[in-house]
Length: 206
Image (cartoon, rainbow, N blue to C red):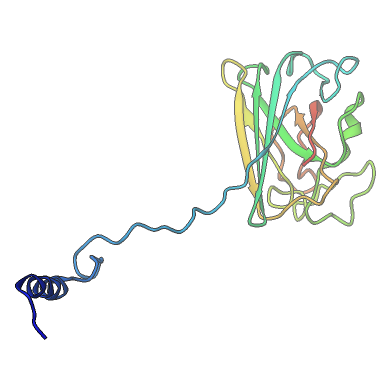
């Protein structure tokens, strides 16, 4: 069979190309690793409840029971994100009393005209000794790992942002509001979880 110079040239080019090929750069041979093409892990989108505090006779979702501490027109932004069995809750308040301490907890029932309508604190593990009208004060149950506490102090403009993370998820339909209290939350035996009067309440379906 006759091989033309043109065909021989093509064959030589192929051999040279094969002989000169090198493995793709890697971190082991000093090159850069190929970019990771795996898709990014999804991040759960938060549910958001934005409300304006109003007096009980005007309010529908956010009630103020103390118009000095929580003036009508103050706002609440509650964001809840659940991911990998954990729950993150963030509260942002504006127009509240300036430079003041507040307690804040997730409660079991929606807000109403009576501050007591919101029920007791939501607990992941419910204190068996607690009863209607006798909230849990045992620090084994009334603590920021078993409940959601969002205590905060406002700035000079009456604004604040606070958040909490717990290693569990709310039981469906059993956490329905966020209540603002008159002081930061106690951790003492017999008073654990107490934070004084209920100043305001915002209904949230956690």
